[in-house]
Image 1: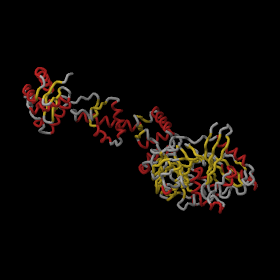
Image 2 (image 1 turned 60 degrees about the vertical axis):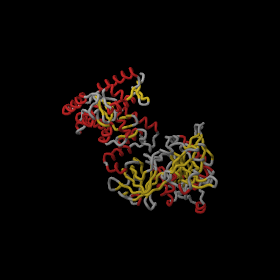
Image 3 (image 1 turned 45 degrees about the vertical axis):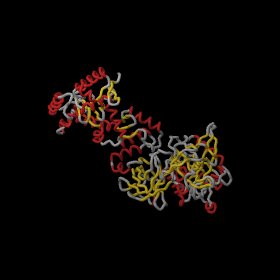
Image 4 (image 1 turned 30 degrees about the vertical axis):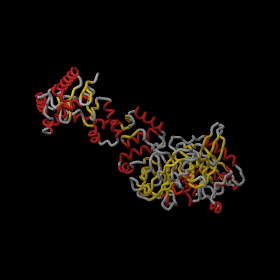
Length: 634
């Protein structure tokens, strides 16, 4: 028998009995604030736990988030339902469908909720069948059209067991929240306990957290550590997605953390104040109401994301967004948030009176550049068509970037590392992308870049055939490649074929450095001058009278046609070998010798012999013993 964890969020009009229903189901009164007791309405979020048995015998542990129904507290309601698995609609049998019922339905739809159970509360007051028919009509063409509707009365207890059974059946059919190793806990409460320190609570999604783990509080990027953690008052060593979780963060003060912050792990993306999203305005809105009017380009809105509420300016490619329409939008946020591609959000008006629209995040980087580019906006439109398709998300991410690090593609997404790796391999197999090491690239773009590199290398061979190849630094600069790993991947790709690295240059494997015909006479003059006095050649500076001569001398040294003894001395290779032989012969016959003795034996000068012997020492041919040299045994 296993335990499955889920989150239930209430929804419904004010005074339709949501909190009373939660108390009847769990025995816990979710209204905890004195003002809530006094006014007998829910103002802020309340919490309770419900343990159920699935039909297959598994245990179901559900955390319930009770939300306010009053129109003045809708922003608190949104903060409570962003991470739920199932909505528990409370609709009073004596009232039926009401304005906040409708607004809560639209909010849940915007947030991507798919599952619900309807509680016909106050069933002891009658009108159950009529209200059930009304609900069915209202839910037609919504994700909740086939949700069970259970009559129940918190006052008499009638129907509560039936409601528990309906919840157990509905939750047993829902897959548990996915663990993609990208944990986020959006803070809905933060408080201090004496002797404990700062405590935050929220619903954990995306991955696990453990006691003692290092975490980051975003958007302030505060590093801290989890000292202890609880789930509904019980100490736990770890928490998994779908659990209501309390974290003790004693290294932080209560002034450093608040509702709307996100607790996550280091390296899991970065915050942003600029989003691209697909925004939708519900067709259910009354065209004459403030909420149903067109949402204009440049309008001020509030973005409700996770448990946060951030002022923003919304921009559309066109003038406005009409009721019943969807469009790409750019959201300039007044303060940063930690948003992932695929996150859902709700838009409300600046006065916080009306829910205007909802949306899904499509990009968290380069928003301004993408928004100005019609082609890249088209890529995002394709992504929006199937946000749950990992292959499409990876393919469009590469199309947006052109070239990307495959290890960090969609770091801020709703997909795990294995899912992304699998998508990359499938896309490569189908010829849609190219993988080179840790680089993933659009196939056409990579081939274009590869072609440009080949052209530049071939051009360098034609223009400077004496060079071993095109310098890597120059090639990278001319290709305008900023990322070192992208350039290394390109070089590895080229060198797997017809190219080779030659020191700090790259060349065709068939390339053999050669002096152009115009410079060959200079090479002949240098060799002739060195041949005239081979053991005591002219100083190197005499060969570097002009840039062309310096270029020839450099080529002769790099190609092995000259041996560089020192910055002042060069020798012909055959001369170098003859001197080595004579030195070896002299020392073999006479024992260790001084510079002077070797200079006289060879017929050279101190200017040549001193650096030459130092070079032989470095190469392990001779070894200095005081002021003498001896041969090193092979």
